[in-house]
Image (cartoon, rainbow, N blue to C red):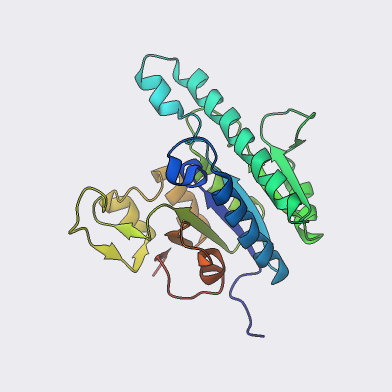
Length: 239
């Protein structure tokens, strides 16, 4: 068996990815496909934590653009990520994978409070950890959560699962001539405003030298390919 390039990773799932083809809510076929792939990652002996967005249920920025208080809208978005995290936990446990949901906002009836050392211990014991409720603070995206948690647990990479197959110089849905990048640097992402993740998250990754692999979640098996270091999607690093 070949040596895998990463021993501990964070998988960042957008809420929209869980919506699948229906565009909103949770598509159970997609949920099960993600859970099955995560189980395969665990079988390879890789420690994996998940960060999931909430855009399939509620987007804080969208709420604030309609006149809602931004902090309130963002807290609602954090609660949407908890709903997605619980759905992922249920799907994973149906595949007999031990899972823990850790929330940045305390809600002990359904999730453990986020404690860095406890999260690492869970992963060392072979459990999947799902980080919910963002950072627990408004004005921060779940991309920033992924970067922050990856740094805290000393993850070696962030796998960014999206609905497109990498990073483009413009929206490939709107522009058929959009150019896809195979490799980028953190500075490219920041200077070109490519929209991979927000500037706070990109800066955190750059400061802590955490590489990013952006790939299409809709193609089955892509999580494993990204984990094995196969040429897939877009790789973002220092060089």
